[in-house]
Length: 441
Image (spheres, rainbow, N blue to C red):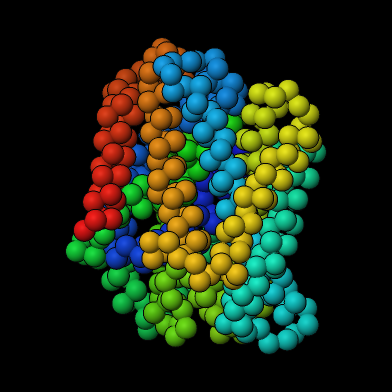
């Protein structure tokens, strides 16, 4: 039972808000079915090998990423990889906390409507959220404060498992909502857009966007999976765990698309962009006979998943700060939490006071998202792949990769090493090259 709880905690960290919130709007921005097919391919050839790699690092060393790199130094870049991954963790936590505050906002709105029985206006709620940066700042501060309290008191493991046990309930609810969404007249057009591979709609930057989405949704590049790997039960087979997480994550993304796109077609005021989830699903609930109850339950479960993922990121930061700077857990929690909150101020104000500022035709929020997910995360993931391949002894990797296998067939192990050494670098460089070309075409 404990093993199941830990696996569910892993799944909840790797899938959830990144699937429901980010995947649909990135698909919409990149033309639909062709991008979805590209995304699924990259999950298989990039996401899965890297996920197995990060989990395996934690299993081999039993330590955080900074301590692991200190133990297995290789080349001049190794000492900087850990610091870069911690920097990315801070950026991701700050950004992710803002999106979590949006979920928290709609949870409170539906809670008020449920308790008071008042009419809930989804369009007015979106306008209130986007026009008031201080609401986002306040809710982001609340979110990060809750994370600090949980991680600082060292009770996050139990909470993560509790959140993990709730995820099957959320999965059932998501399937029900998808079924309802598929009953709309717009579902045929939506499914054609989502699954018909029209490659002419792809952009020069689509490969980079698909790669970034894979890394973001699987929590790769900010080394939370290294921390989880260090706590894996000893009888866990790492490749099997990686396959299970990747499969559930991909299915969740596809279900998110099947939920959102019929609503996008059917909802007049909806548009593409980071707020797409919040402009479609609340409007959908308003058509239900017990809409506030459905909305309250959906956004509560979605927030708990986001909260669990945020705790995983903060825990990674705290463990590394403790080991690197020899400070107490509570102090490390407060310092990293405060830094993440300060980082969050810019994206929190991006939809309100800074909404008219555009760089290269992109708002600050979209630019932040693109730089962080499509550029910085792939660089960290590339360096991580090379470090895993060259720094960790082959016999150590083989021992953990093949653990509990009845047949000691090393074909999959060699295939995994080939992916780390050749496929990850080639795809990453190709993604960067195509994106750069797109800037001048």
